[in-house]
Image (cartoon, rainbow, N blue to C red):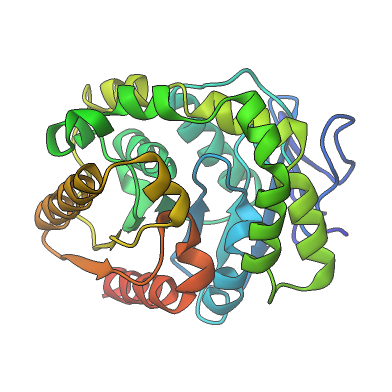
Length: 318
């Protein structure tokens, strides 16, 4: 299914729209592709007006995970979902990548799609590193930030050693474990996506449990410490409106792998980390979310996400 917004975008010689699926990637159920440097990058947009809201997914997540939120956001501004290169429905690239490479790709995508800046960046989990790097490289293109339980370059300064970035890399499930988990993951995704249109739901479940996306999720989680080090070479976030949603709920799988004491230290550390982020800007706010888990935030508490996005959009307009 083609996104009508994609069919006429052709703003540079190395960026053109293409709705053909990659031979090694499943075809997206909505949206289309924008060619960037000879690769197809999945993009789907809705709504109109500005500032445009751009969603940056976490590791193992895809742009369409935020489709339900986008439907509401598109009622009051432009919303953009995408899959960075090597993830989701986009063409493969070697992973992990530098934050600068991801940020540059995103800026080229937005320009090729004629999405005017500055933007409100909505970053979930790993997307926080990429949003921060985008802001370092293109501060004039950032109107606001919505932090969805996202990684921050100062993570290790606030977290217990058992939850350092290096430890998170080591603890992440490998290929064999992920393959064994597929039946459980399919059940979980079916539950989380129960309210999505059937066409999207089945395609997303198939994509998220495919070999390609399993490998990309594992690969992206191997570069966390390097991304933080890269960000430490540049400035902090710009002085723009910020709302940080800090999730302190825990899912059963996390409880099974982590001691209760470490979990509490992680929740305390994340709370202090996001408070510091919000306190570093003139118009920053932290909101604690206790009734869902990290990867369930956009599915179980879309209301909180939508409210945060609307508030940052409104504040950036004024």
